Image 1 (tube, rainbow, N blue to C red):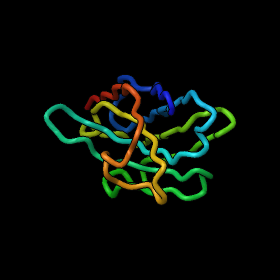
Image 2 (cartoon, helix red, strand yellow):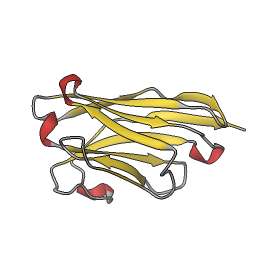
Image 3 (cartoon, rainbow, N blue to C red):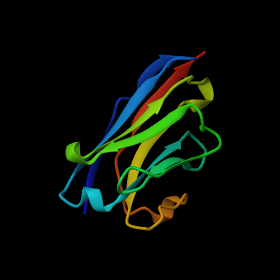
Length: 124
């Protein structure tokens, strides 16, 4: 069991950057892969990126590849999502989640625990 809390969202101008954090409670955090998702009003939750337990292997959705970087620091029980070159269409709630699946999937229903999300708003 893992408790997750996202932070780092806010209002940013187009072309700007944000670094989101996903902080976890629980000694088993390093046993889980971690994914980042986003959900805009009226739309389905969208996969963005995932990172394996060791942090060596990372996967990205085509929609954000090249603009985002996922990383983790297991000693700090934290996963990060660095987002650059932000666009108005990136406006959404951003969520992190963990899965025990090997390899981590791109479907939200394979993830076991979720944070409450952090809002990202990008102005034009």
